[in-house]
Amino acid sequence: MTVQVFKAIIISIVITLHLRERGFFLIKLHDVSKSFGRFQAIKSVSLTIDKGEIHGIIGASGAGKSTLLRLMNLLEIPDDGEVEINGQNLTNLSSKDLRQERKSIGMIFQHFNLVANKTVYENVAVSLQLASFPRKERKSRVMTCLEFVGLETFCGKYPAQLSGGEKQRVAIARALANSPRVLLCDEPTSSLDPNTTAEILGVLEDVNKKLGVTIVIVSHEMEVIKGICNRVTVLANGEIYDTVLIEPSRIQMMDNSPRYFVEQLTEGRVIADA
Amino acid sequence: MPEILIQYEAEILSSIGETFIMVGVSILAAILLGLPVGTFLFLLRKGQVLENRFAFSALNLLVNIIRSFPFLLLVVFLIPFTRFVIGTAIGTAAATVPLAIIAIAHYSRLVEQALLDVPKGVMEAAISMGASVKEIIVKFLYVEARSGLVLGLTTSIISFISYSTIMGVVGGGGIGDFAIRYGYQQFKTDLMIYMIIIMVILVQLIQFTGTTVSRLIDKR
Ligand SMILES: Nc1ncnc2c1ncn2[C@@H]1O[C@H](COP(=O)(O)OP(=O)(O)OP(=O)(O)O)[C@@H](O)[C@H]1O
Ligand SMILES: [Mg+2]
Image (cartoon, rainbow over all chains, first blue to last red; front, top):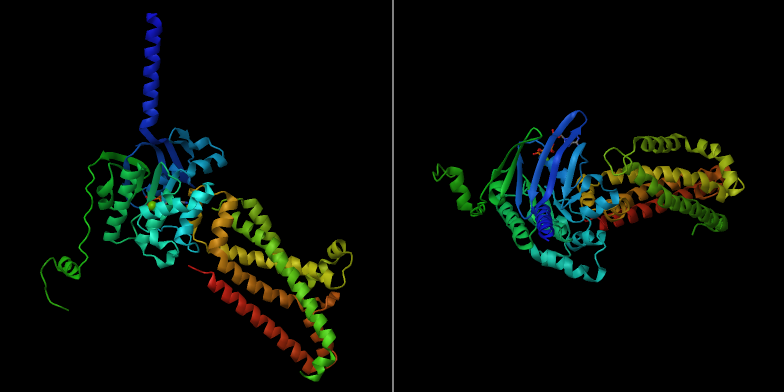
């Protein structure tokens, strides 16, 4: 009797620990390496990303930030090591299963990568088509996603008719369409001006807070990383230099008035009106 | 209408018909086979989803070989093959065989070029969204490259017309053959000039249509 109770307790502890472990992290890289020819871009990196966090990856140009991010959805196939997302080891999946997994991993890019010959609506709808989302519910799903990024009135426009910030919003809507667990962002604001950067970071924060999507964001801009990340990995020469916990300090919108620009340029000292 | 055109009306109409058959078959071959061949030329390249150095080199070489034949020699060289496929090496039907083969090689190169213009990022986005190779081709590549594909086809069609003019050597007929046999060889220079005018109008029409369509579908 006591032995059985003891056994039951042990088993439940083991199960709880196991579940907690599985429930705690979303992405786990284990000793991952990647070389291009002889050049080793990522050197045996291990990294876990927790469920619900906004994780930053920062480092100098060429440090391997993009490569590290692209390893997370196997856009780069690791030479060595394992990539696990949501308890699923991606490294030994068949290509069909990998494609299936990728549908629940969103990704956005510096240059947006929208299909220029598809309208805003079609750009979002295509990700639903790929996932065989029920046809009848597609329209309302697309609209929900576009409303989330504030572009519900832009359905019929083409990317060429949008500003950079609007394009990135469409890309975010497209990435969200299949309710991903994680959103991978490669320099999502690097071709945007400071105000638009703040806007997009606001949208990403909403994605994280309201939809509970885990975010990994690569950037070389310190304000971006400080602006929204909870935890930051500093990458140098393909290796993790350090990982730091931070308190995100929402970045300030810049004053857009011409007077502000002049003041900033002259630091308040007007020398002469040229 | 000039009298000489009325006099040769039946021959002219049938030669226009032969040209349409020869060019029509070339267009079909270009779309049905040249498009897939060109797509493979693109997808088998280094860094693309079907990367395969050996298959790419083989296909690339084949297309180059076909394209480097002087067309008249290709026609002659293919005679046994044509006879095998059509049963004879003479006539309009037989003429469509070498035309179809050069059409496939010609258009596949232009398809490859048009696909190379698709931004790498778009392919990357497609892959990150879990698209299969077929979905990448149909839902991304062809959508993004469509105006280039149309412009390429326009250029190809105009070349097909030009290729078809020498099919007289195997009894293929057509406007070009008519212009040479009646206009040039029988010294009816005015007849030859009228035939050239027909060709010019045809080419203008095709180019105008192609340019307009490609502009209308280009939203980039
Ligand atoms: N496909 C590739 N082929 C060859 N070398 C590559 C490839 N991709 C990346 N590299 C190399 O790997 C290194 C890391 O590249 P990566 O793009 O990850 O850097 P990054 O930190 O994102 O830099 P940036 O801030 O400039 O985007 C670089 O030296 C780059 O030249
Ligand atoms: Mg990068």
